[in-house]
Image 1: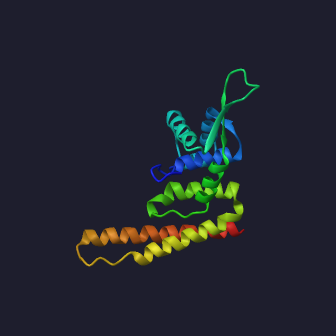
Image 2: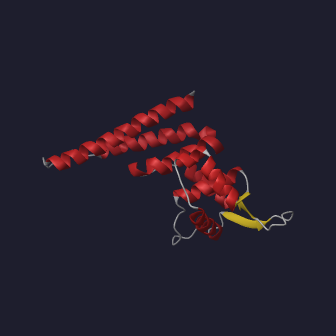
Image 3: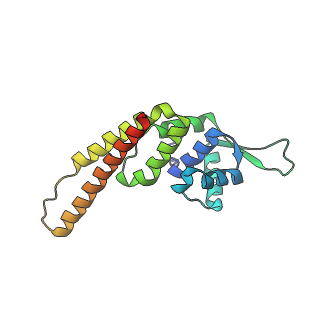
Length: 175
C-alpha cells in the first residue's frame, strides 16, 4: 500500500472479517452483518456497503468474480492474501484512542474471537496496557475552573471504566 492511500477504516476491516469466513455476494454480506451479533455494534446501509466494497477492491484486499453456475450473474466477493494479512494485523492491534473502543475495539474483539481465538487474550492485554498508559498520561489540570475539573474527571472515569471492562473481558476469555 502506498503512503498516499488511506488505511481502510474499521468498517472495511469488518467486511474483510466476514469475507475471511467465507466468500459471498454483497447482499448476503449485508444480511450477515445485520443478523450477526456484530449488528448490535454497527449498522450499515447497503449503498455504503457497495462503496466500501469498491474501495477494498481498489486496494486489492478483495476480488470480485461472477460464479460460473449462477445464471443471475451475482458477483462473489473473496478476500485476497493481502486482505488476510491486513485483517490479521488489524485484529492483533489495540486501538489508539479511547473513543475507538466503542466500535473499532469491539469489532476487533468480535473478529479476533471468531477468526483468531488464540490472539484474543493478547489483544485484551495490549488494550489494557494502552488504557493504563492513557490513564498515566492524564495530567491533573493546573486550572481550578470547575468545568476543566469536570472534563478531567469525565476522562479519568471513562478510561477507568474501559480498564474495568477489559479486565472483565480478560476473565471471560480465560474461561
